[in-house]
Length: 250
Image 1 (cartoon, rainbow, N blue to C red):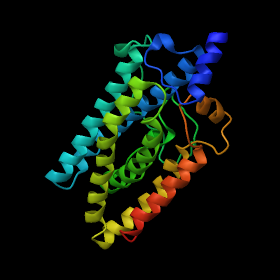
Image 2 (image 1 turned 90 degrees about the horizontal axis):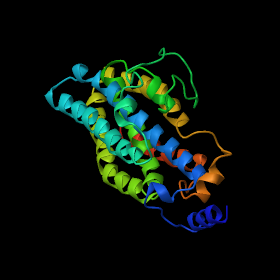
Image 3 (image 1 turned 180 degrees about the horizontal axis):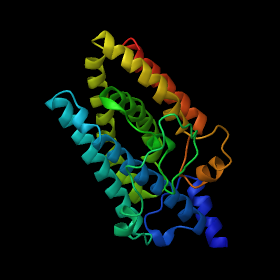
Image 4 (image 1 turned 120 degrees about the vertical axis):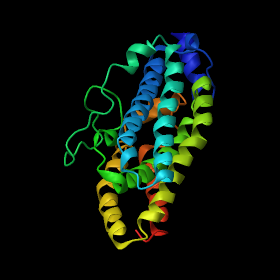
């Protein structure tokens, strides 16, 4: 007990752990939960964007969608490799859910996880067409960028290093989406479709930040797995999304 408390004090003071055998039980549970959420979200995102490849309006757009599909699966694999150090069976994990499964378009899940996996709720909604895919990618890509400010400095060193490698590519996904959105809003029809997609996806992406005043936040903060509260991250994303959309007249 004393040893566990000493480790928690160490983490609370900014300490970093480097191996599975060093982590206390509750930390292990929270860390695995965090990793599962990321892996499941990336696999679901990859499956979702794969369905949009054939809707791409040209070769360059098809390449961008294919790149996002590939890299999100790769990011999931990298984090899953860290999970294997904690005893996770990677082969079984990859096959345990239908990552392409989606709820009805008009369902409202809020921040609730459903379907048995740990993906963010936004990845349960279906993507309908190219404009819808691009807008979703922009909004969620910006959200991922904000969340990366937490993930790249968490207290489990091997995982933080993986996230530091992943972060630039996740940022590039958002850039690819913004480039595609510029071309979409160049026409009146495209702009109208983009406005409708923003109205649909924005609240669903926002829900991914979780509830304000989360009871688990203080525990995660002490463990060095979180630094800013849900509402702080959500507000940061909201300002960023507003700024980026405004430059496009959305």
